[in-house]
Image 1 (tube, rainbow, N blue to C red):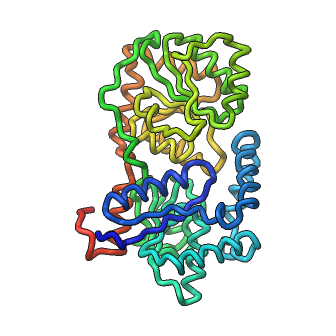
Image 2 (cartoon, helix red, strand yellow):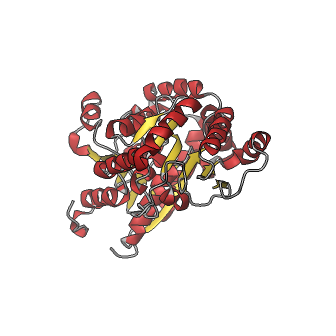
Image 3 (cartoon, rainbow, N blue to C red):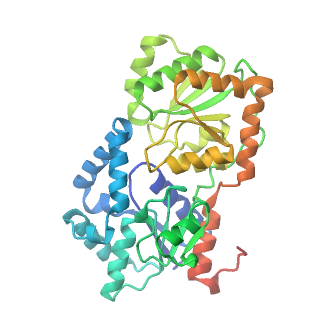
Amino acid sequence: MVNEQKVLLLSIGYGRGHHSAAHALSEEMQRRGWTADVLDVCAEACPSLFSLTQIFYRACVRRLPWLWGLAYAQIDSANWAHLLHLPGISHSMKFLRRRLQASSPRLIVCTYPLYAYMLDAFTQEGWFKTPYAVVVTDAINVNSAWVQSQAPLICLPESTGRATLARRFSISPTRIVASGFPVRAAFFPCPHLPVPAPDGDGLHIMYGAHAPLSRVRDDLVALLDAYPRCRITVLAEERESHLRRMLAKEIPDIPTSSLRFYGTDGSDPAIPLRSAHLYIGKAGASTVFEAYSTLTPMLINYALPGQEEGNLRLLLEDGAGMLISSTEELLFTMHRLMEHGAAGLSRMRRAMQAAARGGGATSTVDVLLSRFFPSCHTDVL
């Protein structure tokens, strides 16, 4: 590919999944000689309004998951083409129109469905001719918003729901391809992880602090009590200071070698995840598929209704993860996984390897280029 080839990746800052997939695709496209830009249209066009919607989203994720379940069901039944007339979305659409007319990309990839409907409208206006695709960022339980635009290509993270989606929405099967969830190259397995001792010596746990804080506190206190020689890396983000205060009341002198907070400053989670024996946390799509890429078994203690249930189901069906409903169940499961030389962890790691769901950026870009630029694409799919 020559350098004038430009791809624009349209993403949005709700959770990590949309941006994570977009940046993984950007990285892979650049590796192949393309110029790639990631654009959060809503954040740039309407920053104040978008910040308010982010606050609502975070409140649902952290404190009101049942409310998100209701919102997700409404999203699934909404006519997204009609949403383009709402003031904030209409303004974002005008912003995107100006950006496209100024930059003239050769390819557009949407990791959030709203943008595909905007591109549908531009196509109907007659001036827009650029090929575009949708890259879905949730597994199995795919919201209808992802597949009801006129995008000529829809890339799924896995194949389970492909036939069902094609039948349900009368979509040509050629428009739907299971290409994997795009994961950055930084997420690759550490092939020689040492086997932790049954007492937790050498055990490295990565813990995503997304569940209610009282549950997070109880989990961490129980793990440090049961495995005082383990190492726990906590992804707490903006909750770090509050969580530190809660833990200090339970364990006044936590050794820094045992508990480390990570990622508050935007640090790359690939670094600790590659060296972790186990991930405990939420079933977010990016985290699930990054764990598949690093071959890190997962214990899920939190999943958003609707949106993340498919990601959890995928882990359970592959034997790559387990659902944990309480701190007591977490300790029981940890004991089972650690006995007999951590045989349970090794079994789950082998299951992840057999599932081969990691690193979908390469296969997704293969699909995109072979579909839209076949004469320039020579890789075998």
